[in-house]
Image 1 (cartoon, helix red, strand yellow):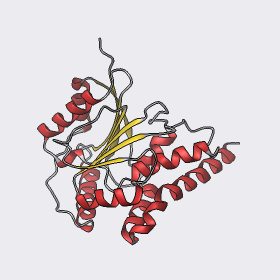
Image 2 (image 1 turned 45 degrees about the vertical axis):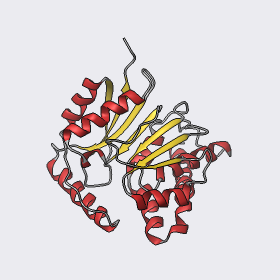
Image 3 (image 1 turned 60 degrees about the vertical axis):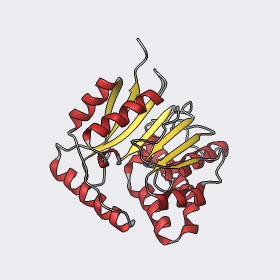
Length: 251
């Protein structure tokens, strides 16, 4: 029974992988292969789904550092599979109609996102702006994957304070993936790969600021989050950790 269960989940993931990456075929080899590779080899996306970390009720989704809008495509593909009855029984439901906002600093990525997945319904909102100054709309779920280290420690805290304010008490959730600076080898490898990918995408390589996992956890706790840490670099040499940070209820 376990083998059959695993086969069904693997088949469902392949379908979701194909659906979510399909819009990027029209943009050329780089966008297509980046989407396929990111979904296929980065454990975070499958981890979010299999662990039920999104939640059916969290419909207002803010994606900070959205790139070419892959999460928007993934959310729409998950909704389509559920509506068609192709969602595995063992996977928690995700929003049937997510209201998505993506914030991205790089104009070319924003243009690509708008042209490739901008026609999804409900229409995703892609904002070209700096996460340190862009308006953060009221959200049920905020996702920040591998981008907060591009700003210094004070700016990181300022962004997280604004994220906390954008989330409803008791139900709002932040999914934040960071590198654990205490795991020096894995952290160094992840930084090197990050810089290499940035160059390939035609962007300027900026300085980065990391923290040990315990400092990330202490910061989020101080800002009013209850935090769970989940290793999120399986199958890779990196030191990535997903922090599931739920905004605590108002006392």
